[in-house]
Image 1: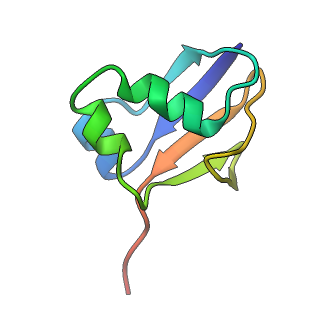
Image 2: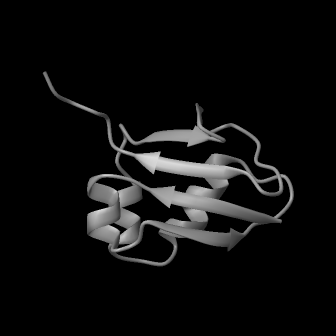
Length: 83
């Protein structure tokens, strides 16, 4: 299945990638997707290992345990801060 993956804020800067289309296996969760991307090595592994990394699936906040489906949009971003 194909997924649309987007990276925001500092992730986009550190990874030099705003978005990509990836092939994934049926039955994958967000956690499986993260492991697959992190397996590329640096800087992917360190950037996606952040314990406070946020994820949205199809523009709704999600968890690492969410199941993914053909054509899903998965976005990763750091927590937003500001005042």
